[in-house]
Image (cartoon, rainbow over all chains, first blue to last red; front, side, top):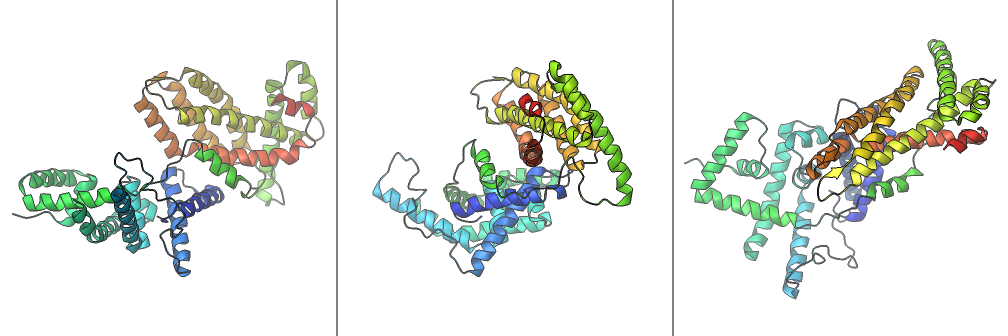
Length: 154
Length: 268
């Protein structure tokens, strides 16, 4: 959701701090996990909004940082593969960056966290139909952005 | 032939089969994909795009990560109001309740002194618990006991949460400790209820349910059963709640321990 590891670490810490402060407000009938996800989502959205206000780039710009895709173990570590994985990573990050904050959050929860639409809507505090449409829009945008890359890589 | 919409393909990819209508939709989507080359090609393209998104690595964290985060944030946590004590001016209707609670706490404190202190020291401890600073002494004893109780409960839960068996796992030792903790918790829950501390009572209730579940589970768990149990622990957020409550109790213990009877600390 935040697009970089350090920000994600900050969000984790801030989420638990907020959860601690708001523990008294937790409704025992609700799922604790969903409640915690909601706090983490709000923290992520706050961070993304404040970053947007400061007009900072979402993608990590530190050239010293290790490329996570390149660092993945591979049976074929050719220079072409490195270049390709670097490009893919960059394009995926760009495409994710093009999503609105709500679309990105809905997509991350559905796609990476494996939450059902119902739970995504609880975390986002919206109607399931709205959560579903956020996921749709996110996938459609990603598809439009990444399809040429996927076709050329086939 | 009606083709599948992009939205239907996305739902099919994620297997969103919440109700019977969607399930039949999913079956018909499957059948349609078998027959329709055009939709199959679209679906294939969707799968490839989403697989590419999957190639973005998610940084993994080990089992000790929770503890590391806790250490990082612990110092930044605000100190909460006294848990078992009631400080500051109270609204009139609460005064009688507070007086009753203090009395109940004194009784429980005296009981705990008898239960947890070495027999040879029992008369001394009971004498202290029954002296002029009754409620404070009872409170200190109770805080120490609850803090200790939470730590022991946390150890049982962490052992289960971090176990990574290849085959079935024998949890009889954890079950035995969980059963002991359940029988011990009744007193603390009653005390918390008497003092009107719903936060403590609620966490102890949750913990009690989890420990009961562990103590009544089969003594050998398959990796799948263990994973299910872990997921339930996670969904309850019980480890986090224990850490929060444990931190509060420790915060209350520290100022109190300065003038606590030495034997109370020695017990731990």
